[in-house]
Length: 390
Image (tube, rainbow, N blue to C red; front, side, top):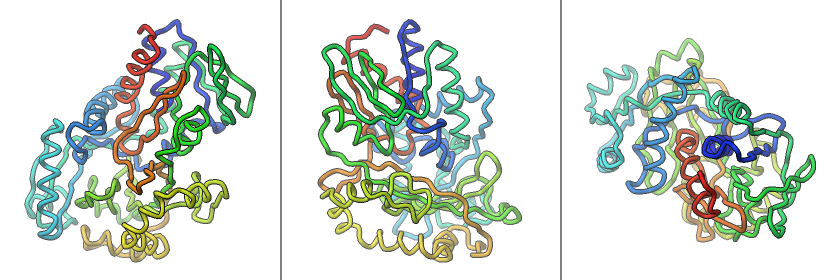
């Protein structure tokens, strides 16, 4: 996200001095490099929301960008499958949302049509999104970084931001390699977005609560069970899409993810716990309000995280031929999910402002898909709020 914004800013004003401060020693080491690699089309999102508008625009632009830069990508398509009658109304709503959002090629499916697209899948009805695709977002991030450097900007790695100080005519950003001074700063800090926003003077709400999502993968000899992407009809009360099958650009087929509140903002291993991260989560009133309201879902997710065989059985609802021995552990990612003080999982992109700074406070999926469109949105806000000329 930060790379996309920097790329857009320097493209609009080639004379500007633009520098990206990256916390880690390399780019794309967190959410960008630990996701399923899906290019979403905008089926799920509430019409009129930023997610809906920026996803549809962003997917179109991302496909064009990948073609121009020679980045491997594929329009493999996705089938959203309903397996019982009570899901049909929700499938109707997804179809309505997709049409309202301008998603192209959406097609309602019966049971036979599902099997034509995915011979091993079973359902009573479905929705086909042919433009859903796959890409390696780490490769996209590297291309963004190259664009920045070629345009005269800089990408400085190993710069963990420690403090933000408002000076008379600038912001001073202290980091692990020194201090940088800038007229304006855009914070795109992912899992650490709330901390840097508070350091710059923003309010605490919403808080980032990390959700760890673990994936399994089909063994190579069982990949034929899934041709493209197979998704369930999601629970509208949660901003997660449920257990699904994802064919990646490298040919692997993922099963997952889980969605478990994590003990660290970089908990790629289940055992990873960081005291400050855990205390931030536990001290936030919204955490307990969420758990009281969604305890049954939390219990299911915990069971899936502890017992992969149960996770596989849940997925076999959509692909009945799937067996526990067909999978092996893959990798885990950590979703930086904004959680309100009222216990509400923030479902849309959220941006805020402090003196001389703009903050991307919530940018979960489909932020990677939408990155070019979000970057343009942020750059326009920079120009509007700070009076900068494009």
